[in-house]
Length: 372
Image 1 (cartoon, rainbow, N blue to C red):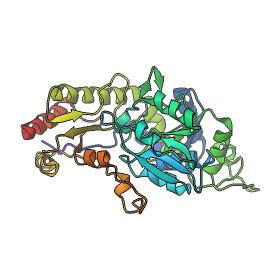
Image 2 (cartoon, one colour):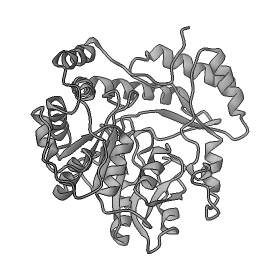
Image 3 (cartoon, helix red, strand yellow):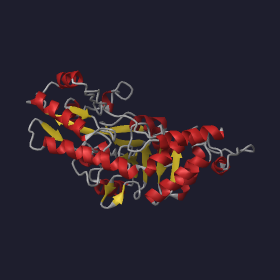
């Protein structure tokens, strides 16, 4: 058996030809391809979209353009990739880490309620694995406390919630298009919102704060007489990224269907297995980015991963609790016992569209053999 990768970029000749076309034009920065990709995404979400260099940049700009900065606080779960927290600190704000719901590994609203104070300005729900938990409850919570909701939807491109695409409603949603996401542009990300003022600010902020530079770039020009009135960043998307993203978006129905079907295969293999817990299984609506499970605490995770590695099966751990990282672990940090305990039981299994159903069955059977 060849090595079964945990995740990978899934490309065809169409993406490679699109990149070659940009290279042949010799205009590699932000230009017409980015505009085309944004327009396609706007049709997908039925909402305005701003494309940026990566998902972390999307979060950072969404926080900044929501008016959040120094001395402000943002509620976020601890079990997430550290990009969520780094985007908060990059804006000058402070991440306030919260526990997660045990079934969905999305933010626990009851725990978040305990951490509200006068400095709390936003909540950042992380759509773990593609699932969104009780998103309506999060918006009700935010309305009650006058908070902005900044959705970290990096895992959830294409997921539906109550018959609506994630990103097509709510305050603001941020997506990632890095190499292993539900669609990729190599790197890249986007912010989706119907707040017109925010959209205009985002367009300038991604181009070092230069007013109106987006329109120039779309026609392959530059702004020379510039006006800058606020902090900006070099966060724009390139034409090379956009060219890949355009082709990936055309394939999204195929890519998402494969992800869903492979996750369903895992689910069928793990039905009624007492030594593990599945995390969400609504793969009619969820487009899964990863397939994590929680093993029983008496099982040695390191031995399990080593055993699977011997069978040429890669595994991962999503994620190390942020509140335990040295950069965020201060004298004020509180222990989040549930998150710490859940972390020791998490393991992610291979999931990407280039996997075959027989490979998924091989992974599941070897996992079950070890557990038994």
